[in-house]
Image 1 (tube, rainbow, N blue to C red):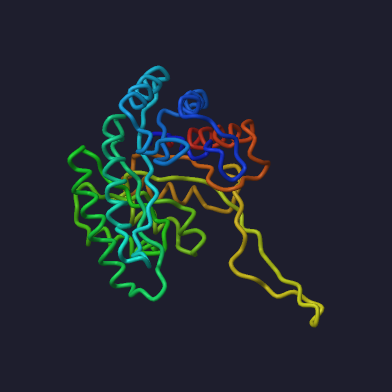
Image 2: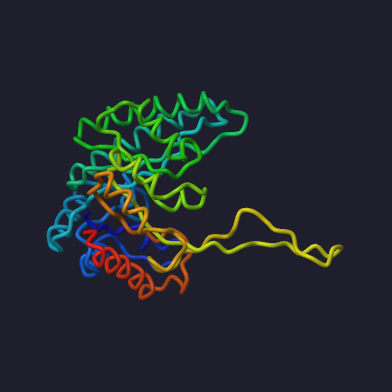
Length: 296
C-alpha cells in the first residue's frame, strides 16, 4: 500500500492548524508519507483557484519533496435540490470534471466523490437513479483525462457495503471504483472484515482515522434519572488507540487483493487539540502503525 496524508487534516477546520499546500506537502514528506490526497476546495485546491501557474508550482513542490499526488478529493452531494430551477447537479458535474483535469496535471489517478444525502420527500429509488446517472456522466468526463472516480462510503445513499456494491454495478464504468473506509461500517455495526473483504476487489483508495464513541445521556428531573440518547458522540483519537478494529479491516482488504492508496485524515476535532504539533503526532502515529504491520 502507498501511505498518503489528506490535506484536509491541515486545512484549518475543526480548530486545527492551517497550512498552505506547499507547506503541507513538505510536512507529509517529512512525516514519512509517499503520497498526498489534496482537498478539492478552498483553502487548498479549489478549481476556481487552479490556474496553470498554481498547478505548475505544485508540480514543482511535489517533485522537490519526492512525493506523489495520489488523489484529489471532491465534495459533492448529488441529491435533488429544492430549487428545481437551479442546476445543482450540473454544477457538480462541472466541478468534478475540473478536478479530474487538475488531478491529471498533478499525476493523480483518482478523484474521490460521494453519493447523496437522502432528501426529504424524495423517493429513494428516484434518488438512486439520479445518483447513478450523475456518476456515470462524471466518469465519462473524467475518462477524457485518464482519471478514475472513487466513490466513498460516506453519504446516506448506498452507504451500506451491500448497497454500495449494488450501486457500483449499476454505474457500470471501468473508471468507477470505491473509496472504502472503516469508520462508517464500524459506526453502523457492519462486520469490518467481511465488509472490507467484499469491497476490496473494487477498492482504489481507503481513507483512515480512528475514533471512540462517547455515550450521551439527558437528565430527566421528574425521574431523578437519565435517559439514553442516540447516537453517541464520536471523537477522533490517535490511530490504533480507538475502537475501530483496523487489524480486521486491513486483513479483509489485503486478502481481497487491495494494494492501493491508504490515506490518513483528521477531519473532525481530535483528542489533544488542533495545534500543529498534535496534528503531526497523529499523522506520524499512522505511518508507524502501518509500517509495523507491513502495510506500506
